[in-house]
Amino acid sequence: MTVPHSIDSHYSGVPMQTCFATRRFLMCAVAIGLCLSFAHLPAQTAKPAESTFRVGLKTIAVPAPSTELNETGPDYRVLLDNLTPTNNRLVAAFLLPDELKALQTSTTHLSRYALVQVPRRAEFADVGTDLFKDVLDSLAKQFDAELTGSLKDQQDEINRRLKAMGQGSTSVTLDKPVMLGSFYSKPDATCYGAIMPVQVNDKTTRMVMAMGVVRVQERILFLYLYAPYVDETTVTWARTTSEHWADATLAANK
Image (cartoon, rainbow, N blue to C red):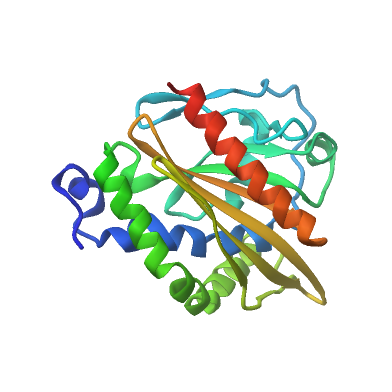
């Protein structure tokens, strides 16, 4: 399937299913692997958190996923760029208050957090309802096969990034994810879930990941939500929170 003319100039004829859909979830393995520690920035007076964000010349409102997660603001959001695939742009990041405070003064680990990203090569492209349906159909067909087939590539990229960050002694190994299937599907939003075991040196952490794909003001946003797996309640939290977040984002932009 080729890209319709309205988006072709941004994608150079690359198949839609590769650019828009499954690869975005594949690259989230990088986020899980790199979320475990960050070097801090010097203490400073940071700019306040934001509630609206620029995406392809449009101003889009993105509410917090839940009351427990706060947007970082632009100064500290830059620290989370390393959690973003190179073919995406980070729009917003939401952390627990204690972890955001720790990130500002020292090295910290993240537990529950959320990222909003936009595909760089489609940020200025209009996505209508028919095209968005094609995107979701491609995602549904290819999700499982491509995610499990690209772990080695994602693992290698994680370790390259760690080395570039001066953490060459840290090694990340990705295990096969447990696919949780579709969390919800609506005309302008859908979401898939997975549990990804990530081994950093000798410690393995299982992260629940929800990836929401939302069409807002004719732009596509990826709403990523993460939490360390404890039991089935973690999956329930991720599913429920992700759906409420997508609904709130769509409502805020009507």
